[in-house]
Image (cartoon, rainbow over all chains, first blue to last red; front, side, top):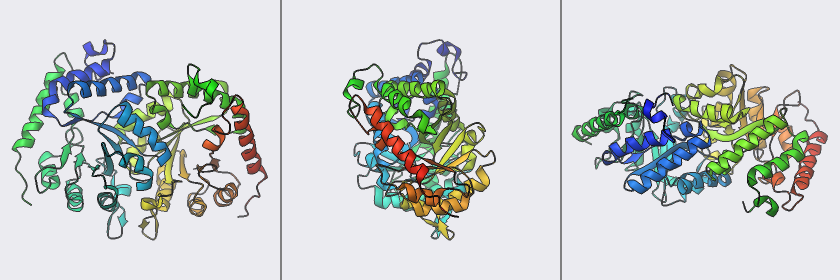
Length: 251
Length: 251
C-alpha cells in the first residue's frame, strides 16, 4: 500500500485501480501482464478480489494481451486440479508459473490443458539459485537436465515454457541450445539487474523470437504521483525501443 | 461441493461448517490440521474467506492444535514476504509447506520467522516423484542431498521440517538417518496407500517421535450423511489406536 500514489490509496480497490491505470497506459506495448499471487494473497480476500478484477479487466478490455499468473505452484495431481481451476478458470489466466520438483505425473492436470501454458521454473533469477539448480546430474547441472526433460517428454501439447532469469545469461544460452524454439520467460530485467542485450544474445531462437522478457518493479514504480502511469509508459517505451533496436545476435 | 453432506451444502459457509464439525469431533486426537490452499483458492474469495474462518476457529477454540498450511509455495526473497504474510500473519498458520528448488537465500523470509515452521518438500508421495527427486547427485539421490543441506545449513533457527510421503518408507528411512531428530511430515497414509507400521519403522527417531503423520481424504470423507463427523472421529480413533499400539521399532 505504501508504494501506491497517495490519490490511489484512497480509492475503493486501490490495487486494482493502480493496475488498471498502468494497463491502460501500456497495453499497446506489451505481450502479457504477469501479476504475482503472493502480493494479493498477503491481503486476503480483499487482495484476491482485486487480482480477479485485474484479470477480468485485461480479458475484457484488451483481449489480445496475455495473462501470466506468477503463482509458482505445484502439488500432487489430485490437488493440482484446484490450482488449475484457480488460475485457468476462475482468473482465466493464459499461463501459470510452476515448480518442476514433483515430476510430470503430478503436473498432468496443468499439462493436459492444451489451451493454457505451463511455465516451469528452470534457472531462477535469485542470487542463491545455484544451490540446487546447478548440482551436477550426469555431466551437467540439474537445471539443464530439467530443461531437456520438459522439452522432450512433457511437451506433447506444445504448451510448456521455462523460466530462466535475466541475471544468468550464460545459463540462458545453454537452455536455449537444449530446448529449440520453446518460449522462455525471462524475469530479472530492471530492478534485479539483468541486462537486455545479454538476454537477447543468449536467448533468442534462430528465428529471433522465443523470449517473454519481464520487467516489473522498474515499470510499476517508475513514478509515484498523479502521473505515475505516464512514467510507467515512458519506462515501457524505453524497454520496447531498446528491444526493437538491439543488435540481433548471429547464430 | 459434491463431496459435502447434503445438509451442509445448504449452509452459508459450507466448507467452513464442514471443517468446523470435523474439527469439533476430532480435536482431542490430533496434533495439527493441514488445510490445502488449492481447494480453497479454486473457489476464489469465497474459498479464501472460509479458509480464514477455519484457521481462526482452530486458533480461538483449540489453541493447542497446530495449523499446517499446505500451500507448497516458494518464490524469490522479495516475493516470499507476501506468502509469509499470507500464511503466518493473515491465517496465523504455525507451519507452511514449501518447495526447496530456489535455495536457502530465497527462502530466508520463511526461515527467519523463528516462531513458525518451514516444511520443505523432500520426497513427495506421488507415483512420479522419482523423476527429479531421485536423480543421482554425487553418489546419492537428489532428495537425500536436499534433506542433508536443509538439516545442516538451513536450520539455524531449528524451525525446518521435511515432507516424505508414506508411500516411500525406504526413502523415509534414509532421510531419518540423515536429519537426526528433525520432524518429518508424512502424508500419504490412507487414500494414497501408505502403510502406518512401515512409516513408524522407517521414520521414528531414536526417542520414538519426530513424525507428523497426515491422513486427509480417508478421514474427512469417512461418511457423507448427517453423522459424517462421527464417522470421521471413528476413522481418526482407529488411526490413533493403531499409532499408539504399533510395535516400536528397535534402533
